[in-house]
Amino acid sequence: MTLVEVLFVLLGAMALGSAVLVAVSNNLVHCALWLVVTLGALAGCYLLLAAEFLAWVQVLIYLGAVVVLLLFALMLTRAPTGTVADLTSSNRILAALTAAAAAGVLIVSFAAGFGGTRIQIDSGDIGNAEALGSTLFGSWVLGFEVLSVLLLAALIGAIVLSRRQERD
Amino acid sequence: MPLLFPLVLSALLFAIGTYVVMARRHAVLVLMGVELMLNAVNLNLVAFDAWSHDPLDSGQVLALFVIAIAAAEIGLGLAIVLLVFRTHQHIDVDALRELADRDAASTP
Image (cartoon, rainbow over all chains, first blue to last red):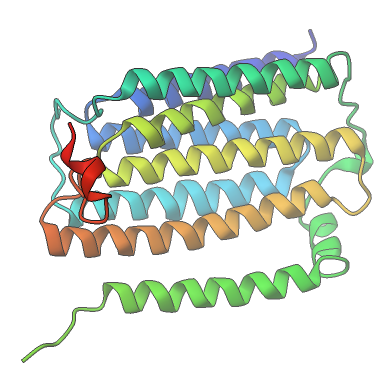
């Protein structure tokens, strides 16, 4: 195994372990903090797959914004900061079976389709800000603009939903 | 690196995300599960982008789009969660069953 593969396996194990802790932990704040570890390890995986710009976007948006939003939501809904006994519903067995079945089907089909293929990363593939920016504003500019309208709509929707209704 | 490494990692992360969405009772935890699933999809996109040497960087650009949509989704989702908390004083998704089918809801 090369150094990149060893690093990828280590980061993947880190992401998986903390994702499992998100799934089983009985403390809401710990769940959010384990989610930080998962998303950070995934940013490392992106770096190893030559997606440099995407890794920093992941750190900025997910680790910076999304997790802070989740923690704010926990705070605003007065979530208990200690251990809560009943965070998992009674159909956990069914949920675990469904998740295991989904993982099984996905892994078997991936192994059947891409069993022996390898990723060859050369220096032309590195997705830094320059490379990604020129394709984003060249070939993908329509999607980019549509996405900006969608973000605006979501922003207005969030404001309308969270505004207190003034009734007299 | 074998293409299977990121693919298996993303499949397992997706499965954990589905489990979190289905089994957890707190609405904010359900949103965390959705984030896990979206990140698994992103990892798949990046892996196939690195594998296919796409000159347009399709996978990475689509992953960026997914991140932006996830940001929109989390903003709207948290606004809905806060609204539910304001009207019900709790956000236990198992207990929110006003919209459930009455016949199905009355049977345990």
